[in-house]
Image (cartoon, rainbow, N blue to C red; front, side, top):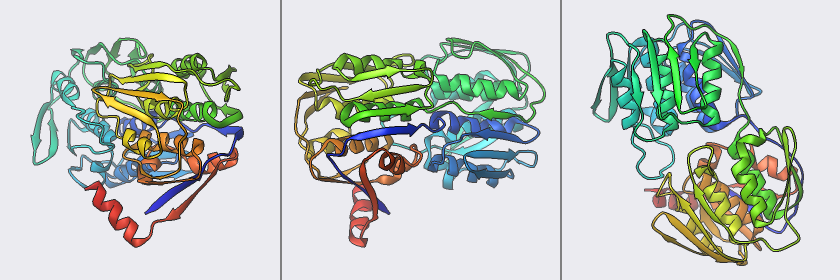
Length: 431
């Protein structure tokens, strides 16, 4: 087990290249199960979630290679092997295997997914969609069993806007008989990315990116080559870091429309943000940062995945800031860690209330989930002294070589293996 160490005080300057989108990758990889010939995905991020999914595709018979950010899978020899335990339980996005395997084999056995602990994230809307398409769904011994004699199109209204349910229903519906209509669908860019891949494979999908998606079922899907979209959350994380401690940080390979809510909020608090065609230049203003209220919403609102990094930045804003997370009510475990570093912040219900600016001091802190880890990295960059972050495995789930990228723009950040007693203590704290 490793720990991440950051000596604060360095100014960031230079160019950061953004990797492919983690939240797309974990859906695109399962989608390849539906093809009847090889599929290639370019610019896939080299993160642990992707490597776990590659392992799972191999377990069910796929031939997989993943080199230099290019993923190639031959799905022709895949079988409907049950995946009730093991790697499938290590990431939340394993639930996309349900829709993909149901779509191809009309049956699947998938263990209940893991990933970051952000409070209850039920899959009832996924199950509602699968049942509408004709599947019988049961929970047996901690695994979801899906069985269908055949799949048929249906009109499905999602009771809550859900990215996962929208994509999972798409995966199950593309080879169903007849038309499927998903109403109150999520609109995230990652949904459009998955729909683009499926369309390149021969699917008939209209309306991705709107709240109504129409799918005409087809009998066969073929292989193709697909370029994944840039990761808007990684881009946003570096934008926040730039607003915190940079003179000029150029974030390259960005779709500016995907980060508009963050761009607007950073400008509101006084950061200097300049937007180009596929780049964003961010620097810390010479003037003090101003406080702001932030509320996370479904796309195109402010993303919940940037709530935690933004919280770290707002510790340096003058006055009182309020951050409200309407998506995940339990996404404030980083607050206690920020307090260890000197932040003046408290949690009330679904909101964090910050008073600033406060001088942060380096401390030993724990990344309890992926984006909490990002927030602590940003706090460490701003703090005096050395910040020691344990729980690095959460950060590795979603950020492609974040340490090396930060080193490349001037951050004093490095990894060290944890001592045996530190590792034991860390595992005990996670239990």
